[in-house]
Length: 459
Image (cartoon, rainbow, N blue to C red; front, side, top):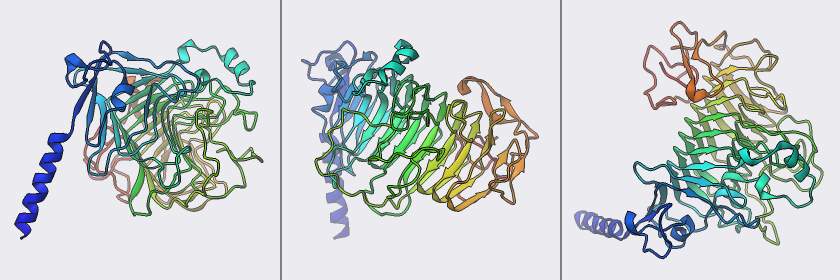
């Protein structure tokens, strides 16, 4: 009987695989084509979105994909369809190709559906075409112009009903840069993985206080144990704000990585430095007028999942390197942060008004005059096995090390340098096995020596 059931399931799976379609999009395609071969590729990504079914793969060829720049547009590609738990929809670069998706409207890619994988894509914003003085003037207008506020990738559940928020998205091996708004912004969603990405030079001109990688108001899909949010093996640098956040009239955020507001409180500070309070309805750092909210806003369920921030390099950002604000249940493990806080003066790596946060095996190097960490209204913080270059009294772990980490080659563009550790560094073989990571930022196995290394690299 069991054998018959197994054969039946195999037949069903095989039949499904045969029914899944491979779609093609190309910069020299035509939406009148059938999209089923490279030679008959579609021209626009939105054409493919209107046809994909669960399990399908969209292969994107060379070209610059540019939307219509309609101010009401959600993005160059708006993904409203959904896959299934057993049949994710994949959007990826065709092998050997390097497609570039330009931001238009409010995003490069905006996702409101579930079970999607984005892989090997480049999303490029319009920072090079913006003058700061004009962005400052634009921010005074009552209605925001998306040209100055477009995110690279947005997962956005604000316009969805309470039981239809986006969930289960993987953003892998993507490059998100020069977006006037935030880099990758995830709002009212659950189960998101962001890994092996390069996220840089974003949030420069927006009026909403964005960052490189942001999750905000996580919306619980379920209460299953394990990690619901994973941010790992990313390079994140030179994200910053230069335009005051409209809600507080001052510069804010511009962080490398921030997990933002999973609690249900409506009171207290509303920005990571705890120096501003918004008395009106709370507004996201990625708010925009392209999202039509339901007439009656449902109560957000408490998010009880866990998040992992691991093996990331976060450097030269205007805000903090990594932090969590009004957030619970996060493991911050084996990251390297370097010289952040250059615009708003935030500390390098810190929890703020947060609970149940584990911070271990990190290397934390503040800019000259900067600070390692801070502590404001936090509870249940586990801090140990961190290496930092200057002394601090905020959190102290019995196994902390105060020393120069001895990086191989520090460069303003981290990819051109090398933030691994030289032989003789105190960070080598001295990390903890608690919340152990199987690999480092390069995918190398941990540990390799007598113990685990601290920071993002394993020597």
